[in-house]
Image 1 (cartoon, rainbow, N blue to C red):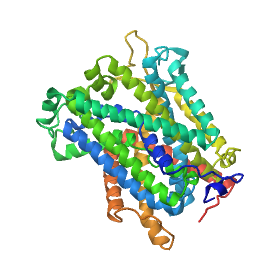
Image 2: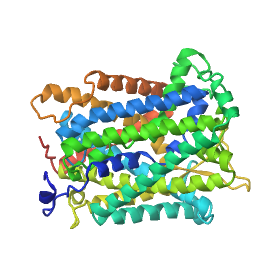
Image 3: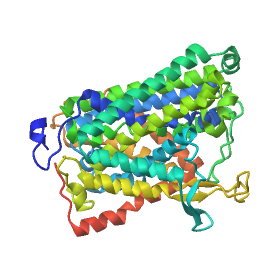
Image 4: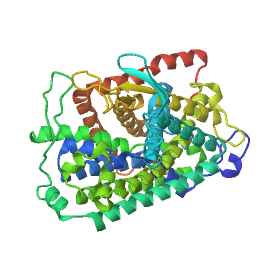
Length: 515
């Protein structure tokens, strides 16, 4: 892998065109999507108080920064395209690297891209009413009792967004970098403005008294019903154990909103001075975002009582906060902010994801054509393949039902539909945690197996900080296994589909393991 920009301009090589600022923008821009504006409603329903809501985001922030500081060692050791795929391959074997890369392509990256694209078109629909989830181009075609296919104007706009961003990324690193820098800077400023308005203008004695008279007393909490008979239903209001379970379940939303910080490692082959830049970019980017997330939630609890956060319409907490301050104009302001945020977020996700498929193909573990670069030094085939699969994930719909199994219908009596990728993302949260645990454990493995390899950066607080992350993530995973079995075992099933596929690719062409 070329080590400098000039060498990188050779035919068939990446160009190292991402400096520290650019890399930090990829980290922050890939993290900030629409989650921070929405998921606090579900978190509040689980933990039931302002204090615990802020604590959930604080713990997520500490876990995210700890993981990023730990990944810095691996990224500095192996500054190659592919990032986490490479780390798992080198720490364990090509098999483990492939399972991660396969799951990334199947749903982690592409499912997230699809979800962000529809969030983009959903909020653009606030500004342009013709973009609607029920303005059908192809009305829903029921495939079974639970699934359907459709194409609405909302879905079409989401797909067009993916096509446009993919095309821009095939034109080279420079235009993709420019979009990332501009949109990440803009949406970061938008979150800062939201925080300032909430704290300086919207804070009111009613919300403050309601939330901080008893900040650690859960109220109005949801009952968490386990999916296995060995445990009993519980909630944050039922003792320390119930609070622990609720806290772990609530982490799903905040962790998902804080994910994708590792995407810059996927594009390590295009980072200048990667042995220094990658660790700094991950530390700076995650530090910035988790601080903004915590302050945004502080603004929410200063503006809205916990009950209003729990029951915000469509879970749009940020919109509810701005409407409290500005009335109907608040919804428009928030819609514009989320449109900008999701556009920049997807650019970073699209840019980074294709680099993993490139690395897999170079090892003989993915479609051979994805392991080539076009004349502009980017993996265009991988970008197009990623776009095609993500676009397909936008089309399937779930047929929504109530607790009794009856189909949900809107005010006009028409059936209501959800999105398949939303279910898939729920399924893989558990799998993502497992891969993070394995990767950070890889630091311990590689220090033992390869002690003499140059480590320009060593994991902060080793071995305590990486070990604490592993323990905390393992506890959250264990709770999800018991209380959210319905969404954990499908995640494992998705990962395990990679086993026969790996064996097939091994049969077609033995992988080349780089040491």
